Length: 378
Length: 259
Image 1 (tube, rainbow over the protein chains, first blue to last red):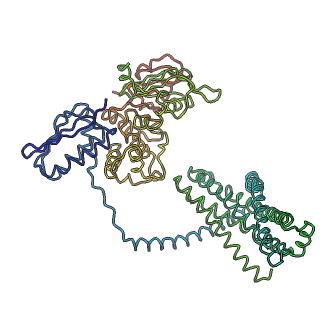
Image 2: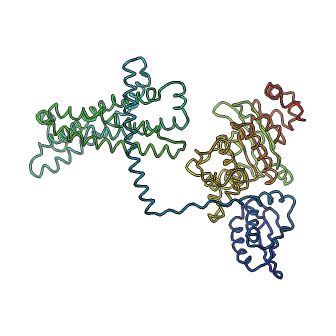
Image 3: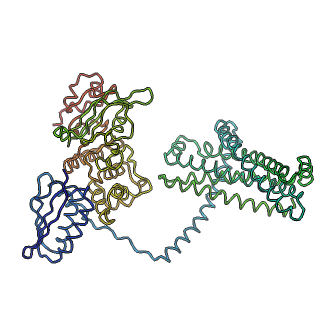
């Protein structure tokens, strides 16, 4: 049915006659464009243009547009154009295409690249201030919602809270325990391997104990929770925002912070210390196991040394940090979720931002706590 | 054989589609003539969209034959892939525009994936299509999230028409549009069908568009086509569901003489 398109161009006197034949349809798109490019330079030499469409068997928007482009180019250069032989079937389409693309496209203003960079930096700095404001705003909103719950305890969404705790806490236990167990084992193995050189193997217990209880246990768990539950929070709230579910809640006189955000934050604050505790225990277990299997230190000695090396203070230092890290993760996850705009791309972007930002802030917070505890002598 | 394939754009024979044990479409046969606008009506959840999605290959069929432009969907397994794409354009109910691309890039997408044209020509074609569906080139720079419901449908139609397909499937094209916009959209479909020689397969609930643009209307009930013909034929159909559909309170306007 479709036949190869051709474009015959012949100069008769001062008139350029072009005679397209065959199928001027999208199937032959590549060929058509090269035909068009071949004939364009010939236009310059001619005073008049005649287009004879009698040989065209099929035509669609693409073909009609290319032919229209040829005649429009000639017209704009002040050369008269005559078009003949339009098939009845094609007349309406050709007439339609003749009308399109007449308007001038506004040219995009050119930008100075240095200025653009400067502007970008300025906007980023300005944005950072805005981010801090959003963080504080969310903190305030959560505090306000919490106050409301304290005044009317029945307004707490208990079902949602239990469900979120189950998801963020209970379901995360296997992976958290496995990862902290491995980390504990790795720290112990590295310690034994290097301390052995100067015969200080027994100090591995001090290192594992203090490191795990003070820093690693809670930090690893917080980072894992940020990646696992923080991202889920952002994605859930974001897709609810996209589908106007949050607007629907507001119009029903409910506060989205109280209904959606508070249960998640409280669940995080409950679950993260528990996970951190379990994680620390698993890491100590892993360290002890390696000390026994790799370092030849019997469990009884390990426990006795651990008892000497660590005090409740170390454990407290680790545990105090956990709820604050949970709060930071929750606030970042929820406020990023509410920032989602209409598109799927924005949902992905906010989820990434949420995870990156909460991990960053968790580490910064850990550093601040280290300074704080050092200065109060804990 | 050739005469038959020339007459019909879509031929469906004894089609059976089901999910698990539930049979949604039961031995359905339907012919869509070339160059006509066929409206498909049916109860909500009655399988209209399932029928459309089966014809375009998104849902596997359990039995029967589907032929589109003389191509057997089974023989040409590639119909879903590259062979299928230029043959038909599909307007999904929610538009299904790619949200990370601008309207213009959405319209260019089929061109870019199926052909190798220069960027400037693709821009011109996309602008031409946008203008044909009644949008301005400035709208082409907007992202789908910034478009109104009617504009989304228009951009989706422009994208469906990007490759000048022979058949266009429309899934509830006028749902969610105000009567003026819906009327404009109907007129647009009619104009494009005439100028581009399209075959249009339209799933709709909109009685006004059934009356004004459809050449024939098919009624889907109990898993099969229970009535097919011009709007007048359907109005006089004796099938109880068709009767209930076209003689309900909301359908009174159909019976009044327009002049």
